[in-house]
Length: 358
Image (cartoon, rainbow, N blue to C red):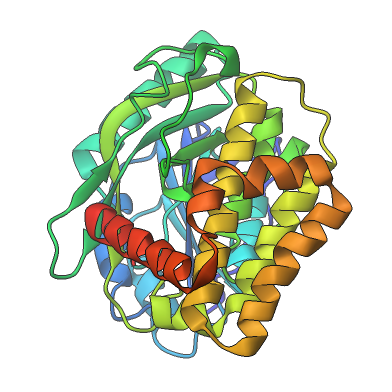
């Protein structure tokens, strides 16, 4: 069985049973690694959405029946394709999905997550309207829902920062609330924007979804907030990368992504305004997560790494250090002394319970 297809280009025709069909308005990229146990739930919600939605399942070197399961969906639904590749990690799978995408817009849905089908239909109708009117909207933001085992679902919305159902620019947005930022689950990018900005995520690295939700934003000129609860973000497997025990084992990769974001921000010439405010806000939160996880680990090496993070940032960019380290989030996650450390960890636990993240 050969399921790998050639990467798409802007001129690549799309065919179903040998007949050319219109370009889909949306490509859903599904990175999948050893996902046989739960991939069907994801594909049930995106695989039968109709010809306007192309689904590209990227099998990232799975050693179980992931590819075969995906191929069964592809055999039933012409809009589903399976691309098989050697294992390279989540970022590598997204890179390959982007190469193969034929849709005008692109969304990543992880194989253990799923989408609300009614919300997906509304998203497709919205994107269809942009395409028919020739509106090159760069980014569509929608809500996502934490689906944590044993907890009630928690919806993350962005109405406090983004005007609803109106094309706007960064200047038309408002400040994001503390702790609220754009995760990959909330984003639908214009595919051409991702290609034109040269997005290339690191391979064999976890937590690159932060880079996916951060690096392209400087190229986003127009955005649109569709206030529907589209993405269902599942948390509950012990082997998930966002499970706290797993994150503590992969602190080196959390820091690698954290530094990539900091150094990207340092190299940008972004004028004062809402975009720069947002990028700083996002970095503040990721730095706070790194600090808390290093503190949570509590080993001498990780506590030293926590100090090194801030010392190195101060040495490289004193202005950025002051903005990030002494922001409200940065200060709360780095309270001094034993009592301060306990207070920082308590604040983190409260946020976990309130929001529902792992």
